[in-house]
Image 1 (cartoon, rainbow, N blue to C red):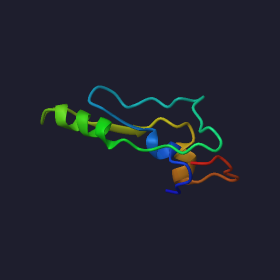
Image 2: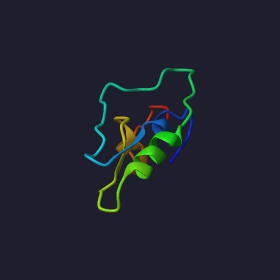
Image 3: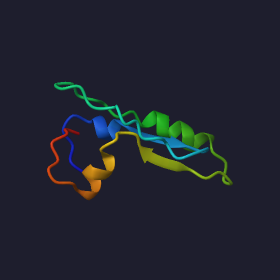
Length: 77
C-alpha cells in the first residue's frame, strides 16, 4: 500500500466487539503527516481472551480504493 502522509495507516483500528466503521468525512489535512500508534492495536490484542474474535479495519473512506485500485486516484495517503 502506498505511503505518503500516513493518514491511511493511522486509520487502522482494532476491536473485539465489531468491525471498525469507515468515517466517510475523514480525510487527511494537506501538508500534515500522521504517525501510526501501534499501542492502540496492541492494547486490544492484549485485552482479548482466546475466545474473542478480533476485528481489524481501516476507518479512512478511501482505504478500499487505495488497496484494490480505482482510476483516477488523487487522494493522498
